[in-house]
View (cartoon, rainbow, N blue to C red):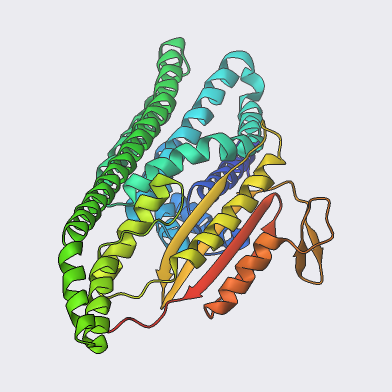
Length: 415
């Protein structure tokens, strides 16, 4: 029969495991639903439990056995999450070390002030951490996911930091004593590690923003270069206009209308090739879209009519902005725009926050303004999606509105 101390110890492990599973679910992209993850981790925990029993005669120190067998959970993590191996390793050791540091802090505090019920105090501390998961999801998850963006781009060097924190934790857990001399460095080390993760996330975010800015500047430079070429071509065209008129006049004097018509068609073609289209009034979006239109034309790639594309993106963004304006400023307001090519289709996805209210009847969305008419923006998007042999799909979650539009690419023009 297990003694009460051992029961509390295993109960602590259960709360600790539950907290870590939920943290993994917050920071990583799961392949399977949460209930499947819980089942897989419980099975892994059972295997590790029996492994600890086997190692007990050789390693009587309970904490040391825990630190040696704990990393076996990584195998389950690799099977359950879609992130790169280095991202999984980073998050695993980060969660393992930080939650264990918090565990040790509560253990030391319990030994100082609640010596007779120190283990119960630890369980209470872990329960508080479990209750703090919504705050971690709201404030810490965006920072960690910023770090993972860089780690997922084949930067395994970042996994060294949480692994070193894990080794420091193992030292404190195995050899630490319940004294002020060990407690104070433990608290300071925990604070420094939290602060280091914050600085890493901030630095990576600034690096990403700087990279995006440099790319935007390069697109602007290319766009201005194209505009200069267009202006130069227009000047040359105007300079040569007198010569062209003389040639056309001679054709007409000889009543050779066919030759005059052919010459005019050639002139129009030369002029059209040097025209840089204006997609929209926003100079940044205009530069980006025109860059890819020009690249597509140079490589004989068909492009969806720019007017239709702008109508769809413009209406969708306008609706998203209006939805965000209806949410209080102190609440979460966001718009996420994604455009990609997939199997011959342009896929446009816009996700935005909204207040949860929609005016929908028989799968038709009506304007939420003081009107009984169908929402013109969504109606226009639906019509253009059908025109390009695609579709418009709307899904909603609590406080999140998702619009997905697919447009079939036209056949490539002949070379």
